[in-house]
Length: 200
Image (cartoon, rainbow, N blue to C red):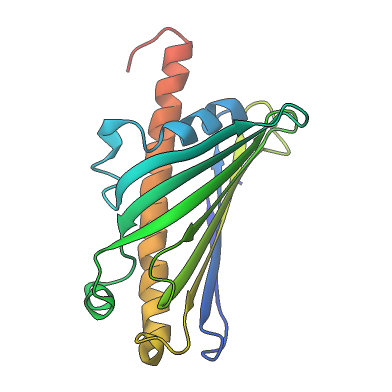
């Protein structure tokens, strides 16, 4: 499947959770796509596209000598999720998150999990992204699977408008996902040209 697919499921308002999943195919090998993932926030030219990302700092970077897996933890400062009225209610314009990444070069898998560590009394957001070789074209294409859950706390100031806030937050996250894929595709093409000795 060449195009990404999208599904959205909303649980009952008592639970106050909205979850959605997306899948995208990169017509680039796993090594190139994962390299692009590392460079997504680092390249200055991407800051305009990824304007919701304010700051990224690496907290930990460790290679397990036994398993060969690479573990990385990064701190992300982003614009607070949701529409303007949400930021007005919670009284903050920014949100702090932690991104945990595990890369297994042997099995060719890269998993990223991002959770917010601030604003947790109002909202909890968890995003999981996984990159794997495409089952039909393992040496040429890469599958990206993304799962995001948004949970409004039942007793928070946002509870009375939970369904609306969750929907608007989901829309914002999907918009940012599109921007992220655009950046990833651009970096992949750059890396492809670089490996071929060409210039874009």
